[in-house]
Each structure stands twice: as structure tokens, then as C-alpha cells.
Length: 215
Ligand code: DX5
Ligand code: ZN
Image (cartoon, rainbow, N blue to C red; front, side, top):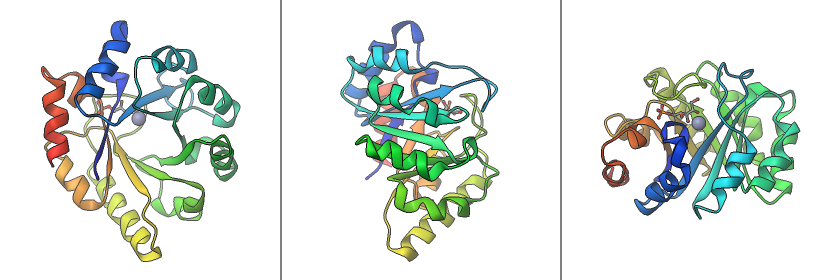
């Protein structure tokens, strides 16, 4: 099953609650919340207080993508804010396995993300600790970039490895995704699709979600 996770980074922040309701009504199962600290990535977005404020506007799965240094410092805050799924970056901490275990110990789903130039094999030893792996299809930090083509091969490699090992975890892709490049990503093995600009900057976001879900 393909799951759509609209990234609110591209939404109108002055009416975030309404934006969330709109995409949820259009069939988005997840809401992707990009947390950036200006250190792990060169941009600052929003943190737990904003997530907590919009939690009451939506019953979708809150898919929180932490692009922050040493994410273990803030897991409790995001749990309290209402996250359902927390993704940490492999590159952001010394011991990703223990952070992932901690997230799961709080009853949440956990995921690990890798940047475009990080080898996909680094997540293999972590597969027992996660519900999902996020393969970044752009350099994290900004919405509205173009998908980097070589990242699609990483999705293919990871899905092949999982199939070989008999595991069927979710593979999420994030960055530069459009209805045009989505079929290739799905064919490569991705099943949780993040899209910011393609959805929120469209004239009719609901139509884009419907189009993506049909693929
Ligand atoms: C990038 C973020 C993405 C971003 C996606 O660092 O992780 O979630 O918002 O936005 P688009 O779909 O516009 O590339
Ligand atoms: Zn993201």
C-alpha cells in the first residue's frame, strides 16, 4: 500500500491547522513534519511547540523527521507533542540504535534516515530497531529541490536486501517527489511518499494527492 505524507514545510504557516485538515480530507494518511535546527542542516524550521499546537487539528499519523544534532536530547518533547513516528538521521548522532530503541520504548514507531551520499548498507544492522527507513532523495534542509537520481538506486538496493532477508519494512522517500517521478520510486520499492511543494504549492492539492494515490 502506498502512503502519502505531505510535508508541511511547503504549507502556509499562517494557517497550518487548515492546511493539515485539507490534505487529510484529500486522503493523506500521514503528515510529515520537518524539524530543522540550523546545525545538522543549514536551515531552521519549527519544533515541538508547533507540532503540539497542530496536533488537535488532525488525526493523521504525525511523521516527525528530525534533522537535528543529537536528537536523543529532544525525543521526550516530540513524544509529548503527539508524534506517532519519529525519524532520526543516521549521521546526526553517535549511537542511532539506542535512540531508536528509546523511541520504541515510548510506544512510538521509529525510523532511520540517510542523506543522499550515505551508503545504504549503514542501515542494515539497524533494521531490527526500526519500522521504516527514510532514503533522502535530496540533501536535507530545504523544500522545493530537484530529486537526485542516484538515490533511486539506493531504494532499489535496500528493497532487494530486505526481500533477501525476508523483512518487509516501510521505505520512505523524501525530497523533490512529483507525480511524474513517483512511478520510478514505487517500482524501486518505496511505499511511504513525502511530498511538500508538489502538494501544497499546487492549485488543487487534493487532486495531486488523488493522482499520487492512483499510481
Ligand atoms: C527536506 C525535507 C523534505 C521537504 C520536501 O529537507 O526533509 O521533507 O520538505 O519538500 P519537497 O517535496 O518540496 O522537496
Ligand atoms: Zn522530510
